Amino acid sequence: MSKENRSSFVISILLPLAIGSLSTLISGNRSMYDMINKPALSPPAFIFPVVWTILYILMGISSYLIYESNNPGRRRALRTYAVQLLFNFFWSIIFFGFSQYFLAFIWLLALILVIIVMICQFYKISPAAAYLQIPYLIWCIFAAYLNFMIYIMNR
Image (cartoon, rainbow, N blue to C red; front, side, top):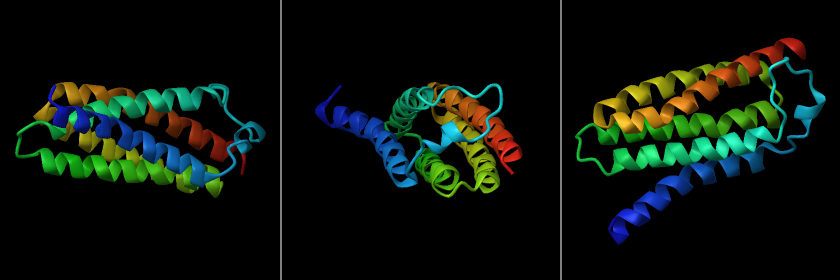
């Protein structure tokens, strides 16, 4: 791997990690998660940063594969990737920062749709890049279940 490729690879991984970290900082006190009513399948709070770190790394590797391709659809796919990062960034602010559980649920459904579009676009360019996004999609679907149940249980 050339020095330029190595830099692109590192930046691709650091970008989603930085966006996730910034979102966490802005969203404020997450201790409210311990105080709200949660459904039976809710993982303990310490699981979330571990899972998100893994998912952000997978997202970064995936985006690098797309970035390094010569496919004419890569710009469009990377724009969709940026849009889903934006949706991802604001979800925790809506959920944790503003405690707007229903709005966060709707926002998460939109994020899931964007992720599906992104996976389809990535697949046309690099099936491996698309496959690396599937754990993220599954986690977001699970998060939508948690989010909706939290909304129902805390009205």
